[in-house]
Image (cartoon, rainbow, N blue to C red; front, side, top):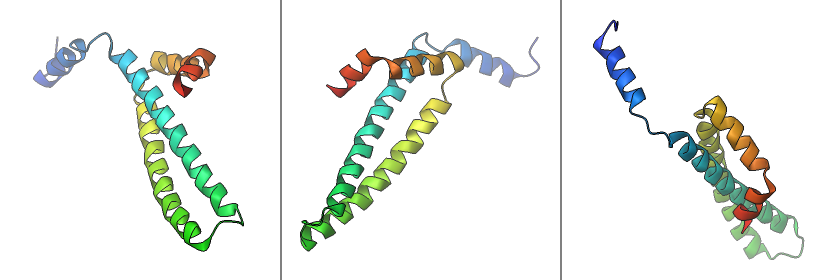
Length: 111
């Protein structure tokens, strides 16, 4: 039935997966999306400070440093979100899209 020991091991490891792995993966993807949104807002706030003409030069330099760090963290978060969503199956992606569009979940995440 199985051509090799590797195929048998792959099947055994697949069957050993827990029933909640999909649910956990969706929860992790939602958490990563929330972290991404927070970092995006932080970077936007830093950019708004830079655009403000009343900011002192010292504060402007400090904000530029923080903006560079925020953009680096945002880029990392974007890649983690992309990897997390890419790892989801079709059913989990559908669940994720429904949950991200849910006003109840959005209100709970923003609390």
